Length: 261
Image (cartoon, rainbow, N blue to C red; front, top):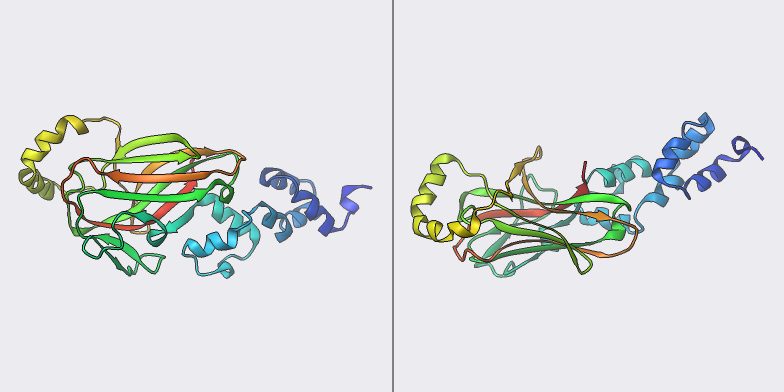
């Protein structure tokens, strides 16, 4: 039997057993194939099995925001904000002396975490690889900003890392703020002795910086990893525990994972 003579539902089911790339190629065969490829039957098969839970955790209002399963699949391909600050493991975040939880009008989440003052900063997020597209390289990013009273965040770079299973696949360093020149001069004077003491530890040409985003937040790259076809746990960490200086004014929205371009 010729494929073009099969009912559209049958064609959609067959295409759903292939891959997103093959599905897109199939749409070039004929108009009937193109119609079958647009079916939700095809694209729901390509979505993670728990995509509804992932969407609800990512701060999206609901699935009605997407007109089709294909549109939802493309959303997953572009970026997945896996966890808001409440879902992350943040040391001492349950102690109001160190962190406060507040709403932010420019956040997609109900609450963000704002650092009051700590000497040790530890943030960790987790995601299982089955939630992501297979055979794809991903980058993990801490979504954050600083308030007007931020201090102590650029004295010593934070250590960032990504682990897949029990294997460390990425590690780097990053400063958690971009300061204006005047404020940087004032902090240099205030921390001058400690800065000189720590200088040998932090001279590193591979230190990442903060990147501004279009949504009003900033991000630092925590690391990257390749997602194969096995189901493993990915751990993404940001730590600054070596400087021992007080730091504050950091606002955490969440961790975003998206395909590397």
